[in-house]
Length: 201
Image (cartoon, rainbow, N blue to C red; front, top):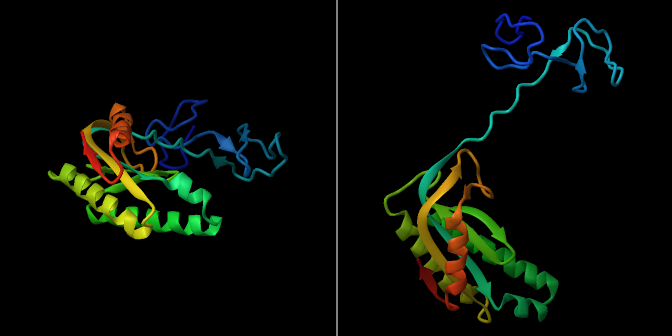
């Protein structure tokens, strides 16, 4: 079987090219596998002109261990405050809070991993690492805790920062970028902080 992508000869019945990894199975325009020489798909009836090679399997994401700093922060008193507010006001407050979090995290070179309810998780040390990543994470946490009462005097924030080793999914952005016990521990450090303070592990 000749690969349509690179012209390499492969054994009969091979599904992927041994030279370039391109799919060798023929598929109809709707993605169903078809036998060599078929004029129509026996699954959906689509016409097969010259046959279309099956798409190559996407490469599996790779991961590596990295030394990072993780910041967790959340609003204290938000549930009570939101019960006494109009839903539009609550949405506007959360939007302003998330915008403030994102701005401060990016100012200090961090990456927002995810927002969870009224909490934020951010990471420093991936995709690029700096020797002062831990300090950057702490400075962000201090600025974030100070900024919340400016958004609403009835609210305060607490934050936790922890530095250590995690598994980083290379090329991932946002949620799912880092994994490991450090992430859970950083959330625990945050929950141990008093309102309006930053707890650094």
